[in-house]
Every structure is written in structure tokens, then in C-alpha cells.
Image (cartoon, rainbow, N blue to C red; front, side, top):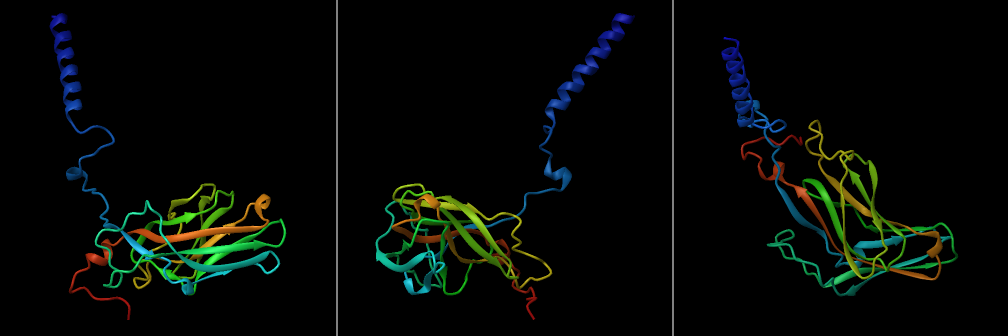
Length: 237
């Protein structure tokens, strides 16, 4: 009798294990049961600025550290790939030039300089990453991206050292602590590029230093902009 009871218990335990293995694995719940789905996004790579107009950019540097000049040169990184079906304000933008900056240091010491636009460059949507092609001349200087939100809060994002030769596409992720959307202010969304800052390595702050920029891009989420109902009201009044 006891033998039959033990066999029945063993059968029940085995059936329970098999049934649990046939269900959805732990950590991967069935969305139809939980009602939880992946957040909706529409990511798109967009051109922010191609540095075609040198007059739109200027250099700034403390007067006691050195002299900075900015000009454009004809050329482009050979490895750069165009954005498919790219249009800027309905007109395809030319891409023939790069922006160059020359820094002449007075003496060795702590120094930095910045390349800034005449006015902040806005990025449509919620920006995920920002990239730019840079020729950094294989130095230990550090490149930083400067951005503002629509409330005037400034953030400086480290893009890494310029210790590489030739052109390189440098990409940085916009951290989540930079607030790009607040549903209490629907008319204020995203970030604006306010320039690039270069923190110079003290051992290399002598003589002349050259740096070049091309093709500033962003990967941005345009879901809210492209999926707005036609009959929805605009909360900007």
C-alpha cells in the first residue's frame, strides 16, 4: 500500500516539474497576462550641423592662455556614411567642408578652449546619442560636449580623449539625469547643443594645436512628434 502511495506522490511531483518548465520562464512574463509592454519609440538618425559655415562657429579661450582661430577647409572623412534620404528643411544640405581650429599656447600650463555656435543648435525630439567626426591629432586632450535644456540648465558630457590619429567618429550617450521632457511644460522638449570644450593636457600645452570637426549628428526619438493625433490640441498657448 505504501509503495502505491509513494509512486503516486512521485508521479505528481514529476508532472508539476514538467508543467512548470512548459510555462513562461522566470524573468520573462507574458505581456498578455501582465499588461506590460515595451515603451514605444521611433529612433532616427538626424543631421544637426555639418560645419559648412565657419561663420556660424567661433572659438573662445582665456586671453592669458593663448590665441584661437577658426576657419573652414574643404574635405571630409572618407569613412563617413550619408544618412539615407537625408533632407534639412526640405533641401539637401551640401557637405564639402570641415571646421578647423588652431590654438597657439603662450606657455605650458592648465588650459582649455571651446568651439561654440553663434546660437544654440536645437535637436528635435528626445536625444539619445550625439556623434561628431573629429581629427584630434593624437593628444591626451579631453573633448567635452556642452548642452542646454529648455530651462537653461547646462550640462557638460565627457566624450573621451583625443588620443587617436586621423578622423574618428566620437559618440556619446545623453545621460538620463538631463531632463528632456516634462509633461507640465509640453512646449519645452529636448536639448540644444551649445558647443564643444577641450580640456588640455598640461604636458601638451605648448606650440600649436590643431583640431577639426565634421558632421554633427544625433539619434533622437521622434515618436511623440510623428504620432500626434491630427485633431489633438496644442498646449502652447
